[in-house]
Image (cartoon, rainbow over all chains, first blue to last red; front, side, top):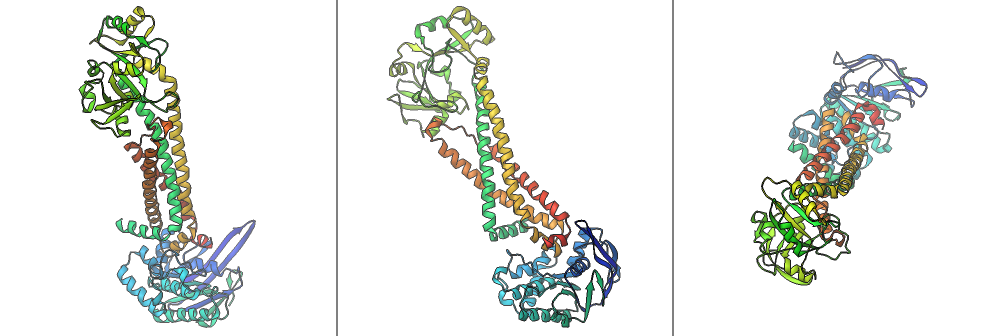
Length: 221
Length: 375
């Protein structure tokens, strides 16, 4: 479903040139759950940003469902993200002035999809994620685990084929972490969604079908 | 559109702890802009009104003292003036200030004019009277527009001048010049109460058809050496220094108000954009196109400016209302909040807010979404 060829990202940090990604090749199947791990600064987040169309590679190609993607137009990248990718961020990033239901529905505001159907789906997701009693709560009234569940629901609302999770458990305690990972795994299985999660946490790795180890901008095993 | 505005209103109400100070700061800028512009508007209106008032009349006054309450002329000298060729009508007048002389007045002072009952219609004919009629007896007063409004005078109201009671017979139309701030009473009565029996301040003359002001002026100059004529050009000469000063000051006021409001509105609105960088980043990551972000921010800032404008205008009107009761203003007001000022202040505020949103937002949106997310 998603294939990368020679993806490279080079940038300047002060006087130094950094090879954040060094000719990375990979292939992710539909419904596959992949964990990407490695030391800090090895290029995991850069990899995630590029395959999520949040950043552009210095060189290399990315294919989605066999079609080569173009990084030349930021608006096209945005539309692609909106239609095919769901994000779960490390810092969660819920909008503080929107309640839980509105946060989940946020991507629909920009996609022009039917809001009533979206609301129905959001309520289903709230049920599945066991936070239906928090629908009209604001983010500052939620625990870390609850907020991350809202973020997962938000990532799923547009029915994406791909979910990208950047350290989804790093701000959670062990118990909440395992709940979140189990939810991600279950939603991947239930909706046949591919999940790529970047993590430091060794407890997350068993949830993946596959683990990719990254070192100095390359996958080493 | 209505949907976007409704959503924006809801979101603004949820962020009121940040929105209210921003709206109040913007309102302060708008308030000052309106107030300062209104001073400029007053002087523009005044200068226009003076030119209009003097367009068809000439005043013959004691040479050394032009302004009211200055030199006095014995009443018998009027006969010499009346014999000058080319004058169709003449009106002897005694002019005095309504208030005590030690009050410094900004703008036109309130004055009382004594005119003989039979000449009153020449100075103020029926077309210049808004309601009621001219004075027809010794204890009646014809009141200027501003004084009537300020002192809440109507036809039949009682008015005390220099300790004497008068009954309001009529109210003059608004002229934006001297007549708005004057009360006309009988000449003899005013001479008695001011102890200036048989004395006048000036003679208002209306030239015959086809006779120029210049001819009358030169005739007056050659026949009566201590009298000088004052027409619109003379007024311009007499007041040019102070009017030029006020014009410069008005220009400075307009510039200050424009730049001040530009600075305050743009600073507040820009800040409300830049402090939401991470919100913008998340929305971009979730699929918001640039047009979505622009429309959200434009509609929110537009609503903020509308609220700020309403508050700013309301406070400006309140300020002007209370300012007219300050004794230092002589009971009048140097603020004219015209319709044009209201429209211009609104358009200016909206334009400033559009740029204040557009410039930082354009810069934020030009950045890579991943860079924005890192903050």
